[in-house]
Length: 122
Image (cartoon, rainbow, N blue to C red; front, side):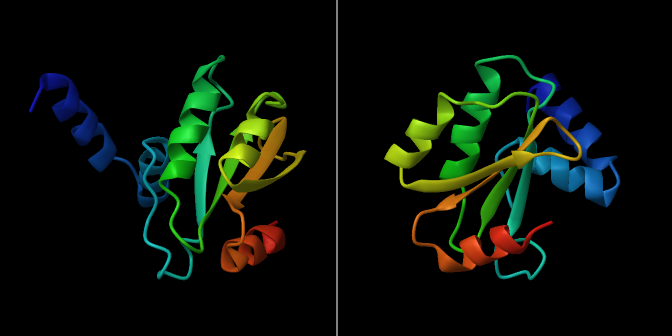
C-alpha cells in the first residue's frame, strides 16, 4: 500500500460515521440499497472547478444500483451534463439547493423505486 493510500485510509477511518459515508460517496461508493436508509447516495462537488464535477458525477452514476439515486450538491447549473445523462439513460431533477446553489437528483430511467425515493426526498 502506498503512503498516500495508507494516509487516506487512516483519515477515512478517523471520521465520524456520517462523515465517513460522505467520504465514501465522494469516492463513488454507495451502500447497498437493501438497507432502508441507503437509497440516496450523496456527492458534494460544490467546491470543485470544471471539469471535475462532471467527471465525478459520471463516475458516481455508473455505480448506482437498482433502487438508488444520486443527490449532487453543486455550485452551478451543469447544463452540458444534462444531454449526457439523457443519452446514458438517466433521469434528473434540478432544483435550488439548501446546502449549495443547486441540487441535482439523478437515477436510472425506468427505476421506479429510485424515482419514488428521489421524488419524496426533501
